[in-house]
Image (cartoon, rainbow, N blue to C red):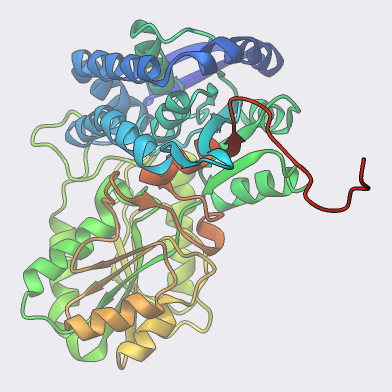
Length: 471
């Protein structure tokens, strides 16, 4: 690969999937700035109609789109298909959200005229996407931004450019102007150039805490730029007593190992009462051992595919060994079925006796188990993190959940549901290192447009009642 092009490989096979030239951030921004005036002045009904055309285009190409996602990420085909469905569903949700979150308001007064609240787009928006949901997550920024009248430059993860290209081509096939939504191929340098450019009005980011913090630091002296950061989590799932042991085990498996653990909402820590431990942990282990790990198009379909690349697989395997060497007790060992491919089997480690558990996001199929005596201790342990994206409580009473909801530091707090699988019809975001209080999903409209207040009269009308000398 030369320094002027990017190559994407299928992680499950190692075969080359895509290659293309690295883009020019300055040129993309100039085109985006030029296109802004006509796009933002287009009636919102016209922009909405174009988004619906886009949804229809994705629907028409759903199967080849899913195949590209599966090949480029290594996730199973069934899961890639659900991602394409989420891309389609995002359009109607975003239309409803824009109407609800940025609706116009008017208050009439005979003496003071009309008071009005309307919304304007920010301008040129940079969308920086992740590799785990390379279509759905950036699309969750792009569609609301376009509806609001912004132009968008989409810089995908350098690990998933083929999926990004397919997504953007669907917008263009739906007759969204090419300069209104542009694809910028590149790596960290292109991302930095986009973030720091003085003509970019907003940065919408999904990815690691390290990269998000770097963006936040870079833009700390530029309060005029809107910045929305979604940065993952070290998410707890707390297990109390329940008669539904099989269901609870299934929810734990779904939380920890869906998408090979490569979800920002994945459960990283199972915090469990000592009194329940012997009933639930063997069941979770048994179920995890039965999970099929295989390539995306295998028959039968696997539950888990591979992680994104060999370097990531190496780091995760090293992290598993480090936890074991520092006091963790392996309940289920992580294995690497193919030495040259990034497939990993699920790992479960009891880290209760570790002196210091690392507060990091291990972005893969590793679940740490921590034993506690009661709900208060469980809540303290759940909050023992700088992150705060998702948390779930399994079992217990409605009163227990009220205590958990009241005390847990997270933007998503569930009861008897997985930590992942959040609804796009609700806000999505967290606190601490998980975000900067700009939740996405249904609330994405909030950071895609800003409110403008007006008082208006047909003719100038004013008088000074005090403080004037007589004429």
